[in-house]
Image (cartoon, helix red, strand yellow):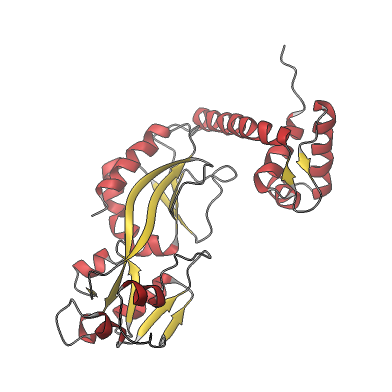
Length: 295
């Protein structure tokens, strides 16, 4: 006979450990922070160990908590996946794909009919710029843009990226490539990078990377979203630094031109899903099809 603590206490601890925040765990489970704290205390009393260091804040896992959390998370994922597998057949289950707004608009939408035809899957696109929590949502796969995996799931590289200077063809009088100084003489468009990083694409970094002469001109227009900077470039408002994959279709259609082969190194597009997913074979098939669509 298995001797296990109450399931509600295990679920409360797993959610609190994943968020490292009792209030967020409470929101996920539909409880109050006090109830989460009480259930975690109950589990600690049963086990005879502290699972969190509560002070100084923010809370962090103790050595015992670090040992229990990944085992419990994997077990709950597997239970949820098996239940999904029992209640929904493979042919009926839609596949939910989480992507950023820019990736959805500039890369995925034009390829979605082919992906659906090649996979035979009903793919539901969930577009949002905040990363989806694969453990606490019904998202099956996420496309993420990052340098390295974070270890919270299985990460599969789709394609590496580079950040290239582009503009509308009518904005330049000569056929590219242009010199760095000619590019920097154009109206410059900039967008805010989603995460604070010294590697964020900027005209300042490109100016240094291209070894351009003279001071960097002022940026003409700033945007909060990459997709808006790309749209502004298409409409002839200036030159933008953009992901080569997000502007690939626009370059092919002649709506944008690449101004130079001098590019900033980008990050990598990854397909991310849980190793315990009940339809992992479907996700691996979608992964293969995504890779074939990278051109």
